[in-house]
Length: 337
Image (cartoon, rainbow, N blue to C red):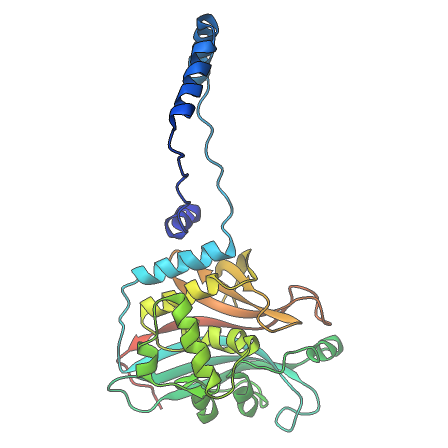
């Protein structure tokens, strides 16, 4: 297993070199006078003691620090840069497992329910046909009274695919269904703003410039604000949308520079895989925050979780919603059905 502290050390900012003050004649004379003023016998004893200590004891090992959230994101970005995945194809193909709470309504019934779904999304690239998405309901259950009360604390800003689950999952488990609503929610859209493959391909690899480009695009449809930027856009940019590896790495570096980034230790995703948790708070949300599960060695994003902050009815740390990415890659295969 790769030593994470070594990987992080390769990607973190180097410590600035210590500035040496040029020795003025006065400084040099001062040091000379100090050296001459020490009795030779004491100087000899000092040398002997120093030699004895150096021989009799080994040098202390440098203390390794636990990687910070920023360290983990930077290490993941470096790993993304090193990947040699195919960068084009007929379709950008994403498979993910999600767990969401659907609010009460005409599609769900009088009470909210929790659903587990498998989404398979094919976003058309050069030479592809039309984008298409399939959703399979893996199960649905009614919420407990406590969960129903806690659901009132949910943010009004849902993940893009949440609303598309209702028409399929209210009937319970079943085969995968072609879902036009889900396609519209993910096909080259940044939040609710349409973007083109050309725009995505020309995003900057400089984190600060990249953020300005994203915010300017969101502003064209009045979709600004940290809530939209953090809760919807960042999950889309880390996996959902097709980006060049160097742009994806820039997204992670941009995230590393955000305030409120912290490491959470080992975290298991909805598929049972273990990665490093990195939470970003202060993104315009109050009762919840987002936690990415990253693989700093392989350069992958395993999943994203919405975590309760403890300011609402959910206990702090409770997973309110989550999605785990089973795969995300370019392919020349065509969607079935």
